[in-house]
Length: 224
Ligand SMILES: C[S@@+](CC[C@H](N)C(=O)[O-])C[C@H]1O[C@@H](n2cnc3c(N)ncnc32)[C@H](O)[C@@H]1O
Image (cartoon, rainbow, N blue to C red):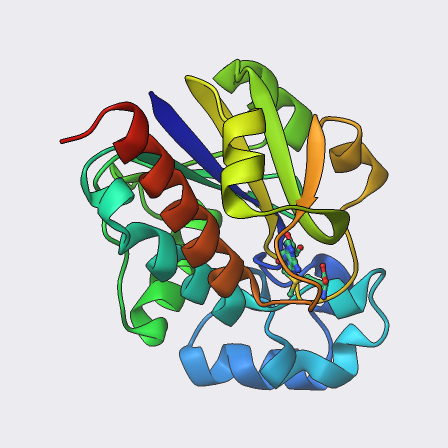
């Protein structure tokens, strides 16, 4: 039994070409001694420039992705090899985190690693990047169920969604973006959309809770 956790449409990308000439982008690239194409889009640095960007409010939050990744990779289920993590991005890249890999806890180091990996400067053995969309990823995994989590889904208790939807091979899809809901492209691939609380929650909080729910379910069906 393996659980696939996919951070969907994550706000993690290199600065798009449209913004390379913007003053705030040029200055942050210069501070790092890099070309604008080699740095992460980051709302805390590029807010003004991002106002010109399509879907600007959903993009440029690598800090959220970092928090989410640390939450997943710190769970007992991940440490036992029962969870596989993928980061699907807004620009339709999929970052595969090889089983057992712990990514940097320091945000500064995470940022540096992602900049290298996304700009293809470094061949990383523990992280693989591919230009594929959510549909292709789901097809490749060949999961029996794809469970999306959203405040706008059907409010369900932990034991309810887990027993109803979790199978030998299931995908949990959680948004890696700061605002809004899943795109139609993603919604089409979900077998169910579950809400775990009436309040809108941060991705890392949702991840910690749903992985814990899964762990409890797993222990029930195969006690240690
Ligand atoms: C910061 S939220 C994204 C934007 C939005 N505020 C929302 O309510 O969905 C990050 C992700 O956490 C998940 N999420 C947030 N609140 C949730 C809830 N109450 N139940 C289930 N999933 C939730 C969704 O997958 C969402 O895309």
